[in-house]
Length: 315
Image (cartoon, rainbow, N blue to C red; front, side):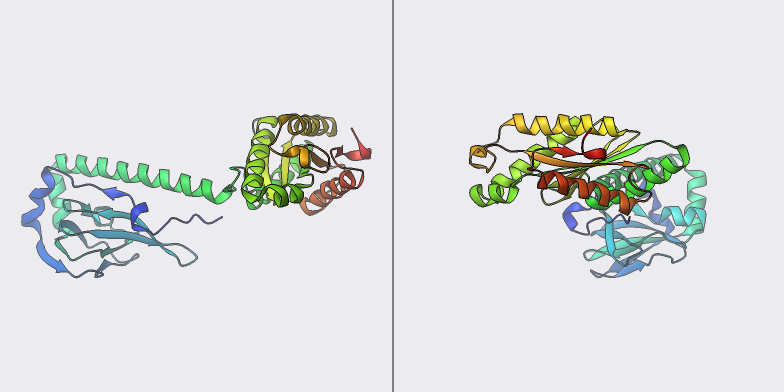
């Protein structure tokens, strides 16, 4: 799964002006004026110099494998950029361009390295600067990854993440011999509720049901929104009996919860139906596993709803 970060200005971390010893870099380089949009270097260019930003604003960006250019951070007067490539002799890891008309000091890499040998205080400042950048980027990647794998309405995992984990867990179960249970739930007559009360109220029902499903599961269970008003729970190490108890506990919670206007539902209250499948009893691969649980959900619907159907038709 690719991690993508927003390229909007207001989402890019800001590197504040650093006080103190960076001002001593002045005699080491030459001043250069940059027009807005001018590129200092491209990702992959050699690290042959360091830049001290004196006026304006710079933008540091990176191109993802799928070709999208994303902004990593913005730099303001007093910031140093390009120091890591200049120190280790590696290629540039990002592109740097002038976000506005700017004035920079270009310092040759060799002169910069010699300066740091004589000024360990500046080297220490650079260390803390890198630590700040790593922490900021780690936080952004974590937040972006979380958004990529969760459903924005309910906060549960999304279908794509569920499918990835299902394949992984079945592979693990094949090696260990552990059972795995899968339960697919559907909110009964949800379209009727939406048509009667509107989509906003329907969304509130989805959020509330999702919270109940998550609280019913064990720590480590993968609980996801399967699509529309359907949800799925992947229970590693769960037997058919374990899955049945889980499904019944959730069904009971929804039936007893109380939802606005549920008395106008065809069954007089909000209910859910579920289909249970167990690996390897019901299937040998992920697609067949899903189909087995889905078929039992269909059985539950056909049998009158507000029920769970598992292996053998019941518990």
